[in-house]
Length: 455
Image 1: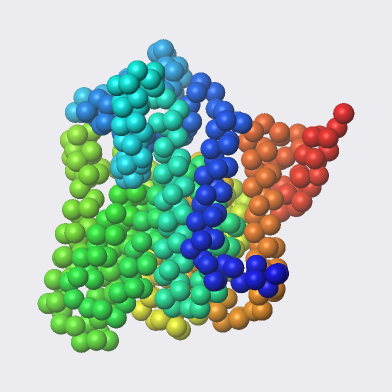
Image 2: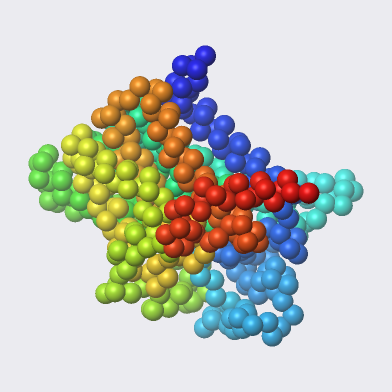
């Protein structure tokens, strides 16, 4: 019986991933009831900015967000830090700093709920038909969880094309449960990271699936998926760099003519631009130009990247908060040995992501669980971790034990972080500083239990 359970992930990887996604959806739904947010709002932070684009387009037929911001923030005028809501851009709109991709991804479920409410109204049911009610906002979270689950499955499929089913399944499950992807799959699935996980996983699955194939079809497919990824998070436009390397690789190793390589690059860019067009349309409406950096020129510090801090700082560093990523990065060497073409492309994408994330003015990504901007690198980390597991070839028991230690280590940090964020700061310190980041997580559960059962 125990042996059967230990082999369950590799035998039924899709079902295990789907079960985790369902568990996340149930936990998220329960949190909306047990821990309701003030004012009836579900969407906070960046998520609200994605959502107003969807609500305004569907219910108002425009991209004027002032009424959404006033309603959802509960503004009456004069609140500190909200002057921007009442300031017009050059085109007479309110600024929006977030990409439109997540709103488009949430649209199907949002429209389904809207249609259900409209039908209910027709038969006399008093269901709200305004786009503000909690059920509308919840569609963003449910859609995000579905996107993250689908992304994990695609990453598993990609890894299984290169390595054993055991390595592919365990790498994705462990990484999903012990990296920042966990937080943005179940606790904050309304941020763009769940959508990014899906988009970049789709890109790398298509890459591995069509690896060895030439022609314009591969270029068009990868270009379209790179554009889709950039639509979710603009930083992922760097996926066009691996496409360029792929074409150069084909010229040097497979005799592809330079003319065909240039044609492939142009097709890739053209399809990517077509997929990215919704964002350019939104920017044109809001700012009067198809390409923009709404945060301003100072948002990116290209000559002053915080390269070491974004990896090693106790202030949301990638490797200090989620060390499983260090293990996965080590596996990229083995990936390159197994498939040099994919290994080179994946390493390039990770290095460029490192530089771009380090060059952002707030390289710590505001309030975040770990270095959240690296969630788009999830499929690359999964490939690296799968390469290590495939090389290690551990017995099921050892693999399960090692995975449990890694997942448990991050889960304890998540408990500590959430306890702090929910106001239990006397027993759960913020994970910063040597003790608070590395050791407090082992003490906090006992302190929480003591307070819970105290008379």
